[in-house]
Image (tube, rainbow, N blue to C red; front, side):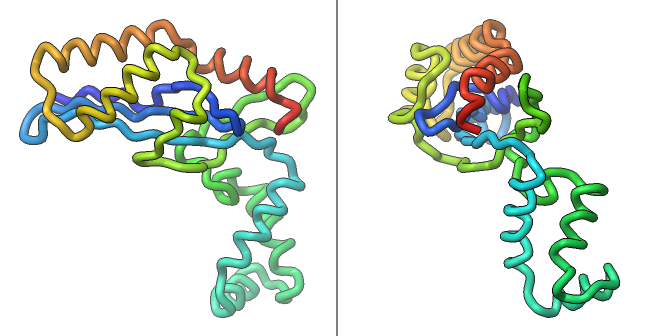
Length: 191
């Protein structure tokens, strides 16, 4: 059996990113506690923003790839970026242009025509506690202390049960979607 609490929202940073914890308590051959942290940055998915980002994507292709794309799209090299952008814009997704793999949800904000997405900014053993403004300071401090002391360590049965209950209690009290919507509304001038 494995208890995983993926994407446990901890709060926002002073720089305007959101921080999620990925918590795992496994049983069996690899009985251990682990936690890692994802950091995502909100952005308005405007045409201008996506075009600018797509320009950077095009810089990653070599001449052979660009030549193949020109043949595929039946266009001149000088038209390639424009043709490919509009093809992806109309038939693809935001994820085809910007890495949103760490948190692929999107939100609408009053007063904005375009949706807000979250670009992947950092993950893994990413220590954000000196910049984090936690939703629940007590829970955040407890989780970071657990990370310091027990990451990739085996937890005893009672301690494991207490850890599971503490995380479940936090999640039961948190309405992630509402918290993020409210945070985005409060910070919409920074998007």
